[in-house]
Structures are given as C-alpha cells and as structure tokens.
Length: 195
Image 1: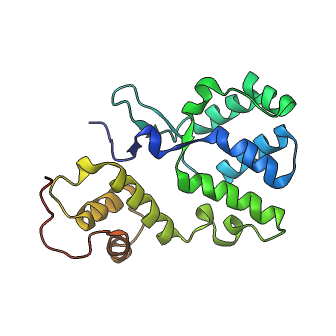
Image 2: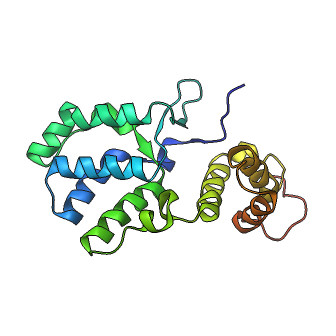
Image 3: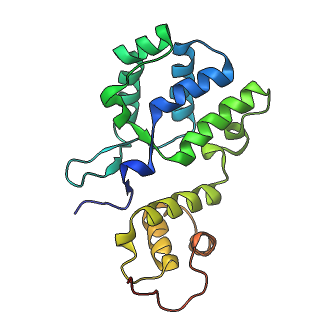
C-alpha cells in the first residue's frame, strides 16, 4: 500500500527554481553561484524535494532521487539561460518543488549570510530548527495538507500517529508534546462532522 501522508497539492508547494533569483538578489552573486548556493543549502539542510505522483496527481516527497534531480536541474539549458541572461522559462523544472517553510529556510540562510550573521543551520542542525520544532512543523504541514487523514478523528490523534510513523527516533513523550503543540483544535471533544 502506498504512503500518501506526505503528499501535497501543487499550490501548497513552491518551485525550487523560485529560490534562484531571490538568492541571487540577496547575495548579489552571479546566476550559477545562486544555483550552487540553493543546491548546497538544500543538501546541507536535508530538505525534502517533491515531485508529481502519476497515481494521485499530488506531489510526493522524493528522498531517493532528490540529489539526482537537483544535479540535473543545475546543468539544464534553463539554468544556463538564467545564469547568462538573468531569466529563464523553467518549463518542466518547476515540477521540482519544496514546502514554503523550506523555501523560507533557504532565503533566510541567504539573508543571514548577506547580513554576516551565523548560519542558523550550523547552530541548530537539522534545517535550522531544533529536532522537536522541525518535527512539529513537518507533522502540522503534512496533516493539514491532507484532510482525508482526519476523517472524523481529532487532529491531535492524527498528528500523534504521523509522528509515530515518520519520527520513530523521538521518544513517546516527545511525540505527545509535539502533537499537543501542533494541534490546531484545542477545544477537545469529538471532531465536528463536515457540513
């Protein structure tokens, strides 16, 4: 059975190519330097790349081939046009997507470097956030993006199940704390039936 828990609709994600011009402008670097910065940041921060899934039409996390896709993106014709002309039509490469939170992490890293601040990722490790905060963000985004997971169940229960499946390295008490913090339905009781 396929795992659909980390899939998103296209409009919930951002093309990774959108980071290139923003990083270029923040750092004042050439096109290929911006591309290289984005790729290195993506890999060093352990971010997730999402690709369209033919079975569902949603975007699925691609942890196996992410580096391959980034390497191919960095040498494509569109990357050369971006580096040489400052603009490009990225065509099918816009299928390589990241979460808005990961987009902001890359931009924040570039901004920190431009301001000569220490790199948050090197201070905290694991994408710039402490492990439990990062787990809370990932769980919240995954569960909120797929309403079929809820189906009359409380968000806290679904969050706890997602964390147990996707973050088994965390202790049970840590997963419970995270599910409590990430729960957006604090009033308790049985979930409302949709109208």
